[in-house]
Image (cartoon, rainbow, N blue to C red; front, top):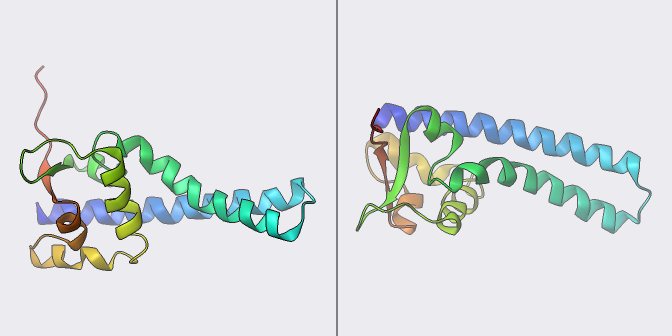
Length: 133
């Protein structure tokens, strides 16, 4: 399980960097399209840079997982009843806590303990159960 979580974190980090690069590229294209005042243009560029990664990962947050977790067949559930985390809890867990802390909250995972982001949303990562044929 530890190896799956590390691989999922690496995949999510690669997806984050790629989506941020796409957001920066699109924000650069906005400057060529519009001749707006500087403040409005800057706000539009920042919104694009932030919303592209959120938009990409939010498709997976609906299923209580991320792109990396989907590829290694794990998901996040609540500790007490094993139910899926809702969209807002996944947003807080994966965007606000992990990205804004530069993934430092995930360091306890490498020691085999729960990450700080898991403790805050009261979640745990499990292997996805296999579906029937």
